[in-house]
Image (tube, rainbow, N blue to C red):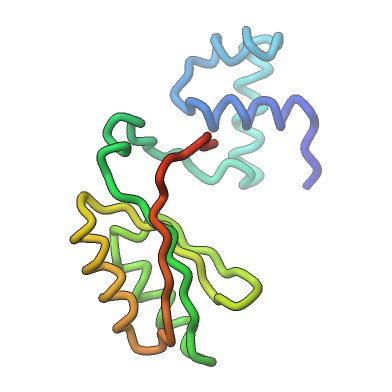
Length: 143
């Protein structure tokens, strides 16, 4: 499906704050409130907007330890590894990537010790060949 410029702008504002009042979004987009509401409903109906999430405050997340964990998986073990990672609440997102690594995970935990334990758990999963991790020092922006 091809989105219009107005749809893209609407999605951008919703990524910033999905709970913003429709009237505020309409004012920022210079559209009527009814038009904005209709566009949101259409994007939801078409599956472009699949849901809404909680974004945790920067001050809270700044106190957490975040890492990018790159994972190599043995052939034919991908589904089992993905499901095991899905069951770990510390793993916030998981992407399949090209190159030397098969998966890239973003993990968030309270302490360095917790990150050490998590990377050990991931490395011990059946089907995981090896991992490497990099601690995130700061986020420059997040959409």
